[in-house]
Length: 158
Image 1 (cartoon, one colour):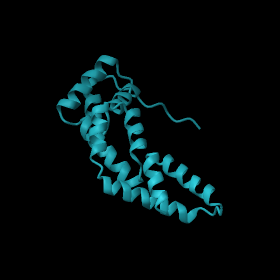
Image 2: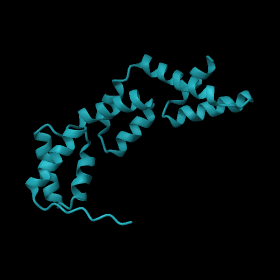
Image 3: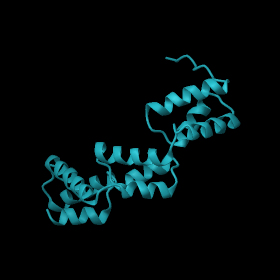
Image 4: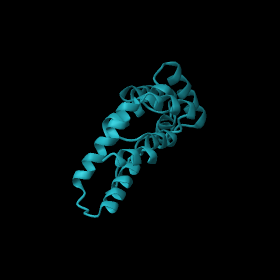
C-alpha cells in the first residue's frame, strides 16, 4: 500500500509557521528540526534561516531540549546516564549541554531507580543458577544504560 507523497513546501514563511507549530508541540533538537525541514523539501539556505528564526523566537533551545530529554527518559523510561547520553549524541546535542543535563539527575534517585529496575527484573528471571542469574541482571541493567560499577555495587548488596 502506497501513501500519497506529502506536498513539498517551497514558501519559507509557510515553512516557518509550520516549524513553529512543530517546535511548540514538543521540545526538539536543532537536528530534528533541520531534518524535518529538509524532509519538507526546503533548500539549505532556507533551512538555516528558519533555524535562526526559531532560535531567536525561543521556539528552539538546545539546552531546554537536553534537560527535557534527560528528565523524560530518566523519569518515564528509567534509562541510565549512558543510554541518555547516547540518545542526546544521536540528536547532535553539544557535549557541554549533555554534561549539564546529566548533572541534573539526583544521585540518590539514580541509585534508587537502578535498584528498582533490578528488583523488578529479578522477580521475572526464572534462572536457578546464581551466576547466570546475576549475569542476566547485569546485562539487563547495562542495556538500560547504567554504569557497570554501580550495577556491581547494587548486585553485591543483594
